[in-house]
Length: 449
Image (tube, rainbow, N blue to C red; front, side):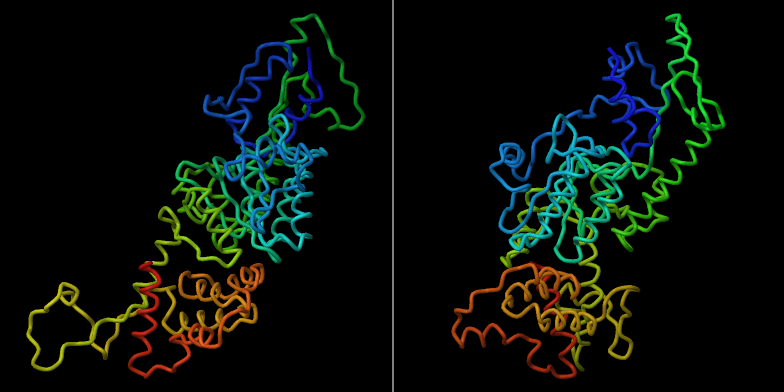
């Protein structure tokens, strides 16, 4: 039995899907769709390709609750809307969540709209496990997510795979978390053409295609694909690839430019490779990272990442750059240093060590901390503001966004406790000789925790 409605969604239409996923689909369902064995040229299926993703790793009750109508379009956990993006992503469809291995862009959009409009939602978590899907509807959904980040923090948690269309969606989030074995990328387009001509000839069937317009019958399945038509389809794929890369660059900014996205040549990257290439921001267990996100949104102490990340490496570089050298030995001091730390040659006060290019100076770090603590959104959220200022490298702009999304603290403190809380190193102007050391000590203590 043939399935023309399914076949027309697979063949002769551009797809944002990993090649192995597309090949696995054709290998598995091709004989049923076409009624004959299928030979795949140019892409081989992989046994590891999963046709149906596993349930949510953040909250496995989510999809059951949505289908049973016991919950809103998404599950809200401590003010964070969890929106799964799983399975094959397709255009058109009224269902929410995954159904028969598929999820619609419209269903995801409906959940995003509800999250954006809900005053109870202070952040959005995208849980992603998908090999991609159709072009139609993908980039419009990406625009919606990017627009949402202007009002509410959005983090993407890759539970296993974020390839092709799924990565286009993930790239629009404020932050992308990937596990050590997770995959991201495949920034490219694939299009397949089915040639039925030999099959119909073997069955004694002759198909006559009658069309009006020189290109109306281009790529029809009853004739071999002409080189000119193949070239046209190739150009269409290249144009869509350019759009894909530009969309990724809109979301990632200087973390992954359009040129860098194109330079990947649709490769896929695993774990640390994805972070190094700029496709993700840090490596961590999705559940642990999600708990950090929830704590941050609600103004609770934020636990440290469970595994090393690219940002952690950058943080250590910045700390080293702003740490001043020890004071030179006083007159009459012994020539040999008393501690191992003093053994390394140190620059003299007249010739201080230059900071590495692109790293913040002490004054920049002081300005960042002051901007966070003094921001209007920090009022009523002082503890969270201090955590952002002293326990992270978050910019004042990003900190303000998270502060605005967090609830204010209860105003039940005594006057003495308030005064004690506000008595920070920044309130007392340091002496000229101690300012650099004090700010360096604060940064060192922050990164040592």
